[in-house]
Image 1: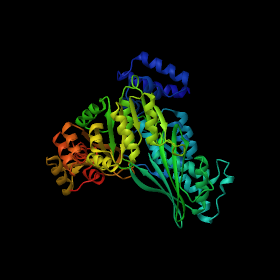
Image 2: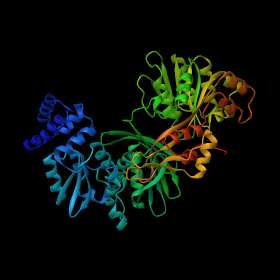
Image 3: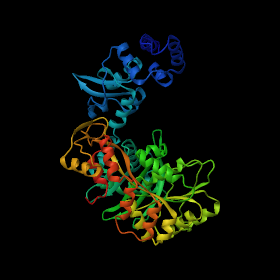
Image 4: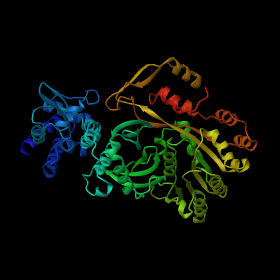
Length: 561
């Protein structure tokens, strides 16, 4: 500890020399370091006025160590076996490569001689320490310490010998194959930011796929011997009937991945080679987005805020499954004044719990459907009613009736675009005069992948993308931003997603068109004349801003050409 403190003082003196902290600040930081046993760099990062970049520069000068950028310097995944994940996280480090019989390790706090000693003893080889930003190291640990590698070793005996896994009844221990397999699969899914885990039995294997940023990719193949115990384990956790394999079932359970709590929604159904399962992952630690964070362009955001300010009426958010409709619904509820308004919801399921809002879950077996829930909530003096989804004529009628009797109703509906919502409501037997009187605004949306910021380059676009942009935005443009593919985006060129939107306001002109049973295209034409930006245009504007690509937009937006 004494050596560690002396080494820390070198960093402190360098920060004082650079006038980033005062001598009094250094004395106080060292006092906290002694009292709490934390590295000085961590104390300063937590409470000091010094930025991470300034700390890194001072460390380089004080320690005279080489610095690496982990977003550019490639990491050899094979060398992570020399330093266990628990040790890497404890000492904030990650092995990068072996060079001339020396293990090169990136550390956030290379002055911690005790940590260096621990790492050298664990690796049993010579160590070369280099400096890297703490945030980059944590991101690299999440990326390169794959639970799937541990899973492969865990199941090696079954793959090579064909030995049967123990039945579910024997899985009381955390080391039982099915228990450990599920745990590792879910841990890796959370690290990969997966929204869904697909477990699909085939003739000779069990395929496990993750949906990340809206795209499915294969994570691992399991031996068929583990399939039945794995499904039984999932059913036990989700409180489903483990003896029932012919009928579809659903349930849910809570899973902890490190400090993160994840709600796992389970659905099973029989297939040709046994039951398949889909596990939907909803993190309880996720911060709900505000309206400004959804990706609405300034004009569309202003238009939507105006719609939300209406005291009553029906606001509908449309798009296919996975388009982010529920996220927009929750962001809209968050934008409302929950202190002075009574906001209630009927959902199936309740995906996120919103403080200040009374949320009710649909229970079809007990007779509590969306329609019945809306009718019941009307007797609870609501100002705003959130309806999870309008999927039948009874729910549509109940939502319209609530909107017409002085309530603000927000809901989702499946339709391709804003104009398609009107025809969908007609299909659900909502009379045009009721629709014209109740609907105040419609939002249609999709999710597109973001260009990976770590490997983004601006280059000449393919000719078809240039022509598409020119046709829709009416301005020629030849260069756009693309991801080249790197270790931080799994070589896809994309990381994360953002919404693209079109927002239609039900003006008097629009109401007249609805009353006259409009021909296809005339509502969109009128909305465009009133200033609506189409989803395709919205996406292409984001492509011009370097957020996504024209090809990604076109792949996600229904377009007739």
